[in-house]
Image (cartoon, rainbow over all chains, first blue to last red; front, side):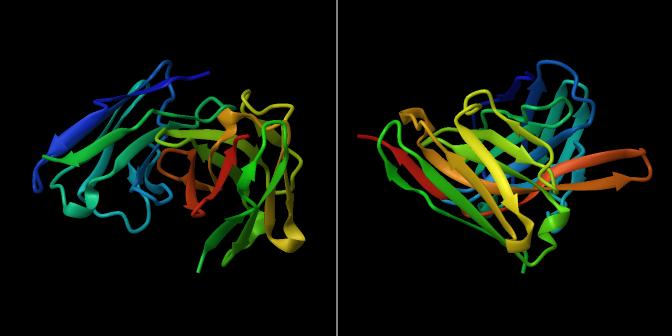
Length: 108
Length: 127
């Protein structure tokens, strides 16, 4: 099973600042990685697939990068609606599909 | 509007059973693979099960294998999760999620993702 590890667990950022979230895989997942955003009481929402392709309707301030075992989700200028929990998920070697434990982006 | 709506959650005693349903609308359900994903209170996302578009291929997480059964009825645009021998650790919000795929002509790769999610149904296992 591929273990996904996200860091940090919590990221405190001021509105308008850049946020950088990391996701590490226990073995290479190539570019077969997705990012999801989840707000309290809501279902997750797809942000990024293929490590770097934004899903339909996702603002350009969200960008993904990386391949192999190291990945990054960057939010260039945080808006109030971006404060949420973010999960990475690999689909290179499954089952099982595996998620990271999440990074909470909170207001500083 | 593309939509998934889960139902069937509730309070059940340990060892009991529950059947979750997921009603799909706004897209050709029979063309899509589907997943169940759960989230325990205050915890992260955990993949539970996958079913192919025809139902011929099925996978389970080890934590539910032998106890849960995924199925679908394409004529009814519905996905199901039969949960037996429930344990306290099965307490969670259960989401159904569509498994989308796109081909990238630039890379020659297929990319997969859970692009449509329901709002979830809550399962509580407690005496």
